[in-house]
Image 1: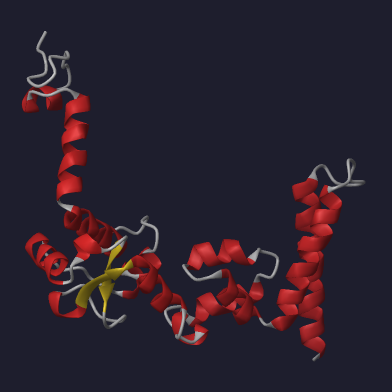
Image 2 (image 1 turned 30 degrees about the vertical axis):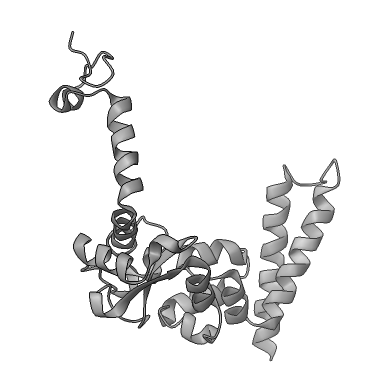
Length: 217
């Protein structure tokens, strides 16, 4: 049996044999590399947002056609130029929010400042401009689905979903949630198998009420 060249632990997998290290030493080496080269992690996350549909935030980056063409040396240069080592939580920022991740359009700033720019000073209609007309209509036509659920699906904030739906839908949703909390406090729910079924029925009723009232107006 072969042993790790660093800690003398037994190694079995092909990867461990190829690197002559055990799994623990391989993981430790990766962590050490990321700690010494934090700009590599920063670039990797930017690429994930732009290239992997299952990545969190893909709809706001790759889904909008944003591409990441930065290289490791370029991000390292930005790291040193902007003094990221002295920041509490450095973040890779695009100066033009509709532009790609290219050297001329990127800088490194504090994460808190980056998040503030993303959420403040930009009208909600502009933040939702990436949504297609079909997606906007789906949000309006599905008041039976909670705003946080649709927000996660389309990559926008729950507040934006409520504004797209309109004031009437917001009031109905809050009423559904308040009645749902009242139902949840009861031990027995007459006519319903469980709490989820009761809430679903309540949402369907108010969705029908909303569509009926809109048809009359």
